[in-house]
Length: 234
Image (cartoon, rainbow, N blue to C red; front, side, top):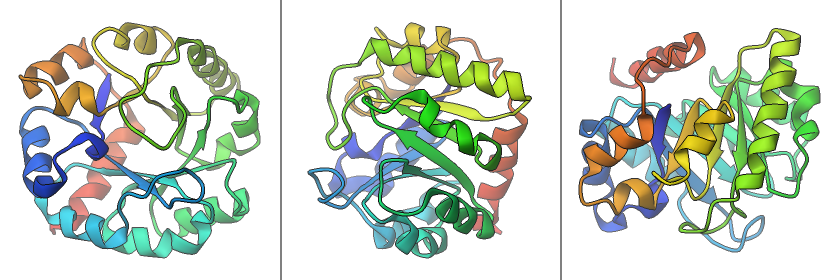
């Protein structure tokens, strides 16, 4: 399992230091939740914050746009240093157009589905994206309880990818902890987002090791993303 700690749960007064801390502790990606107060009832960070954080780590930036009009902001987040940009199928921007815009910037595009959205909503786009993020809580706030019934969506999406011979990363976000990670792994997830489970742990490195489980995950797509992330330091 690859672990992407969500900065939504970090100490916002020390965000740069918090990124350094999770990188040293063994994190694989940095998950950045962007909320606009319209698509979800909360406001978090924007491109300027992400740009300021980019020099603090070589880890890929996994930017999750919980905003109503993602297409309007792809260039801004690309310029800020995103390596992966995921956006919701439920948002107002055209899905195909937004995917193509992300791809045109050399960034991995991904789609996100809320708990009430069926897995089949992403099927028409699987050959155009590199990631599907299944929300296991209602998006908008951290610290919510894990929805175990969402694991059937992961299984359904993985089966469809295998049927079509597609390599995609499957990510889970919401309520992931030591108590729920086994269900996530059994359902076939590649990446788990964990906020409070990492940042609020007394032993950050120990928490990440526990969430990772076995260390034999090997994805050509993820290795390619790592290579792209290195460009920020060349």
